[in-house]
Amino acid sequence: MIYPSKLIEDAVNEVSKLPGIGKKTAFRLVLHLLKEQSTATESLSSALLSLRKNITYCKECHNIADDHLCNICNNPRRDPSILCIVEDTRDVMAIENTHQYNGIYHVLGGIISPLQGIGPSDLKIDALTRRIPGSTIKEVILALSPTMEGDTTAFYITKKIKDFNVKISTISRGIPVGGELEYTDEITLGRSITARTTYEH
Amino acid sequence: MIYPSKLIEDAVNEVSKLPGIGKKTAFRLVLHLLKEQSTATESLSSALLSLRKNITYCKECHNIADDHLCNICNNPRRDPSILCIVEDTRDVMAIENTHQYNGIYHVLGGIISPLQGIGPSDLKIDALTRRIPGSTIKEVILALSPTMEGDTTAFYITKKIKDFNVKISTISRGIPVGGELEYTDEITLGRSITARTTYEH
Image (cartoon, rainbow over all chains, first blue to last red; front, side):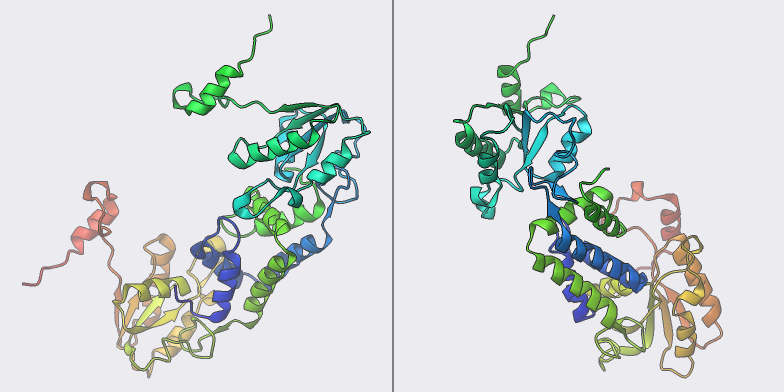
């Protein structure tokens, strides 16, 4: 596309680096900012810059936090004997929204992905192996996405922590609630049979 | 949604002010910037700020330009007797992409929309009425979207320029090329019949 101005082109290129935003959407967003008062662009920029500069992470679980401890690690009502390992903050929020979990978290900050050049040393796995020994943690739940990367990460972590005296579990895979059995892929359906739940009666 | 940090919340609020970006997408974009190097956020911000600060508009057609005249107004090969009136830069680019038009443009910078509080004085309509008299312009093409706002704007402009000695035309409405006749709405189909094109033979 030939843009009417170099400034527009630079801005479009920068905005379209964001995930899920193509050149066309980026151009629309850039034109929107041009139509708005310049204060709109200024407050957007300053919010992003201030976020990037001042963000802090919980020193216990490595979740994003305003203080040196996050609200969850800081909450005496949470059960410190169960530790849930997740990829990032969004997963913490998703699990918190279920209101089914009262333990604490460990945020890896990503997932092992050779394609994207992310190895174990880029994640908070060493921090995890330092965190467990001598702690109150009795169970570690691996709550990673059931993808190739998620499974690789889970396998790696399991190997690293299997000698600690903790139970290791993973969130169950199966047919989503509301899903249709006949449209479920074979792997999921197979797992949902082998990992079937016994009715308690 | 409860965000893990006030800084995140502020950034999400700012990003979700952009059109078509909801809170969830905004949160994803913000987390992406946190994962990237801080230079990514800095170059994004500076591109947007520099755009907003240094952008200039062509003094003839009011299109976005790097100089005081845009590439089209500055091009001696363009036909200065035909003037195409469009809403914004994107429409200029769309028409340029057709390679069917060799005249010049007039960019209104918006469209009359009482709902959004945009009146004629917010647009470059006065500039248009000053531009036509004494110029080489012989025909004015109204290339506005066939919506309520577009039609209102076209009607207003027609009233303003009808006393100048110029031919006024509008882009044709009809069935899009590749469209199915039976699925076309009544108004479009009706217009495509009344404004039918005679075969030249």
